Amino acid sequence: MKFDTESIKLLGAMSESFGPSGFENETASIVRKAAEPFADSVLNDKLGSVIFTRNGSSRSPKVLLAGHIDEVGFVITGIDEKTGFLTFNPLGGWFDQVLLGQRVRIRGRLGDVVGVIASKPPHLLQPEEREKVVKLSQMYIDVGAAGKETVEKELGIRVGDPVSPLAQFMTALNDSVVIGKAFDDRIGTFLGIEVLKRLKKGDVSHPNSVYMAATVQEEVGLRGAQTVAHVVDPDVSIVLETDIAGDVPGIKENEAPARMGGGPSIITYDSSMIPNQPLKRMVIETAEQEGIPYQLSTVARGGTDAGKFHLNRSGCPSIAICVPARHIHSHSAIVNLNDIDLAASLVVALLRKLDETAVKSFVYE
Ligand SMILES: [Zn+2]
Image (cartoon, rainbow, N blue to C red; front, side, top):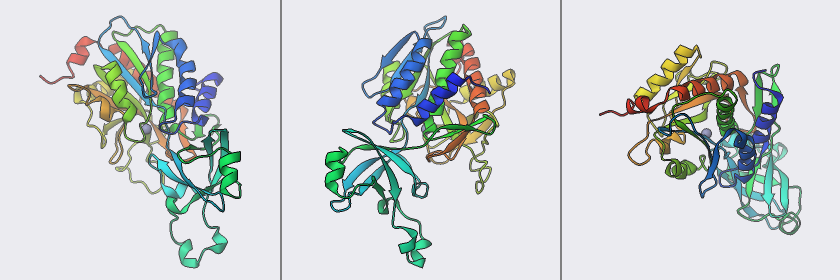
């Protein structure tokens, strides 16, 4: 196994923690506790993101690493008077078909409540209805109650309460892969913590100051990235993310070129950013020099926090280095631990190189 039991336990706790966009405080505190020992200081913005700093041999340039800690979830929109069933809206991008039959956790004012996402049972569906996709707007969350009063008074659930998928984290395939929810982007955040840990434990010298941000509200429009960019004002940013692994039936290679187990992927363009080209070349060269396998990827629809970082002030050379993940934005994504290990090695190798001269060379004059 590439990671010790303690690291896997941390990844599991991060994955299982409750943290839909806008409601990330539980995840933030787990991350803070885990990363603090490897940081020189910890900063906060006023939106909920946490930033860990690590001083290198030179104050500048400032290198921002970032993983977002929010997950796709839901918010309660209504409670049916008679049945007590709950209607809900998505927080972030969901494919409705992965929802039916899944368990969720609602965070009410009296504590957490478990519910099940359901719709009309198959027995009652007309033959033509069975052929159709059930839309999220036709689904409800059943908490087992019978009536609005129980839900409101006994369970303490109100309109506006957040909902997160409920899914157990586990290892599989001889402990080489992990399965769980919220891998987008608790995997990237875990990778960031791993980088800080390697810098500290290996006493790695780096000619820059490192800022590792655990950002909030990425899934609802890269909102945490905006405030973090303001706090850090980075000279270069490396976003640590999950990429869509295309080695899944029905996906053409050019639709999602990265595959699980093939090493970290470098996003060459997505709908939020075209990365800085000299920086991209440096990432590729570094991987080749270090003998780290890498994959060049494209994402037609979707972006990362780098979409905000690269537009900070007069611009900030940025790139996203990713861990390919299957089935993200569902209760059960799958990631290969070796890819996380290789991604951490690549980021550490880059941090050793990113000095003033290198960062100056990224800017076209
Ligand atoms: Zn993400």
